[in-house]
Length: 431
Ligand code: SDX
Image (cartoon, rainbow, N blue to C red; front, top):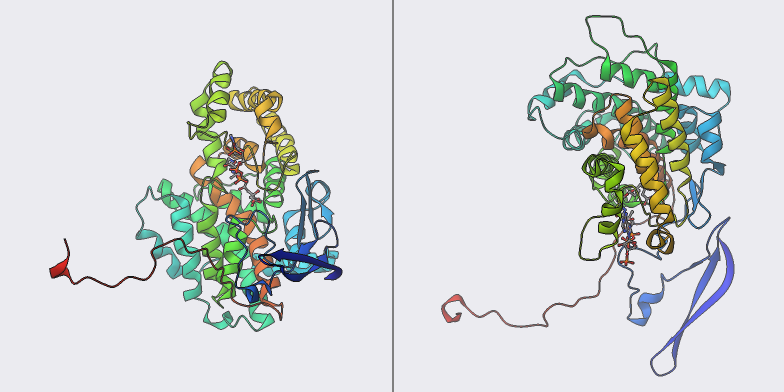
């Protein structure tokens, strides 16, 4: 990192410490506080509002302007000109693939899409109505029980094969969650289909008839995966990095990321948006729900709005809105009441002083649920689809960390506010 002088912290009776400042390729400078511990003090930053946990070369976000770059390429251009496997190659390797590299990568991923047949029996242990994310956490974590040949995280070849296996198998497992939930037979992956087409096939095909895919819907779904692929140090990615920092194997780390993504404040928001729109029901109810979202005594939040980093429009939300319109038009659903309600909710919210002052804009989750629902994907599967797209980001960030000779186990400290030392009173003398 480029040195940019020091920050001097002064406190108490004239004590001070110089803390180095480092610049970034683009974005904020950082103050290196690693030596602060010598002062006997820690920094305090719950939720990591102003804390950079690592150096990274993968994704850049400018929340004030609303920019998102994967390896320097704007998300809008990647969504327009690339397919998801190209974006996977880019995130993993740092450069867009040549046609030969793209073909080799697709062959590698395609030929790892099946799961060990014994994994099918894991599903039988779950209730049919188990939430797909509960099953995904369990089954993805169980992958580490099958791949003893690639768990040496210090070996680049093991890291590469694990990355391929995860990118290839997470869609198969996600589709199996849906099929198990519905009582339909599992559909084995097809090597003659693209990544996105194969997922829709495993979700909706039936052994009883030939499956015909709709290229407009396949392209839209592929783009949705690109929009979800990575997003710098969000909660689930930070979880993957922290789990990985202990030396845990990549399958366990990705399972930890899936668990963190599930929360409604994070990747579970797309499912929550659909439930919220259904609860609002009609445009005439929008003002009432906007009022609830502004009421400090009401825990209701406008799901799909707001973001820790974006204080402007999430660039993914705009691409998602266009994709939503494209899919609904293709399906003859341009009058879809939920979409019209969402458009009106966005318009009213963005004109409201509360949302303007707090810089609350639609995020990636606001429209994703509507388009996934139009594709026939049930609400309970929305976050599983998010996990599918984010797996490449998680594994790219994990690989970047493990390959960094400077990395060490993540171990934050605390400000202790509990009881001072006291002696145990034996039970006989208590009470
Ligand atoms: C994702 O980090 C990532 O990059 C995540 C993600 C990714 O790709 O990995 O982008 C994916 O998780 C998108 C976010 C999906 N979550 C939601 O849509 C849930 C609804 N949004 C919020 O819960 C909230 O906006 C967060 C969790 C997204 C961000 O929370 P912060 O940064 O901790 O902000 P905050 O909760 O402190 O909110 C700041 C203020 C608060 O008011 P004050 O206490 O300052 O008076 O804005 C208010 C909040 O009450 N606010 C909202 C609101 N979001 C924030 N008020 C009403 N509705 C909302 N949605």
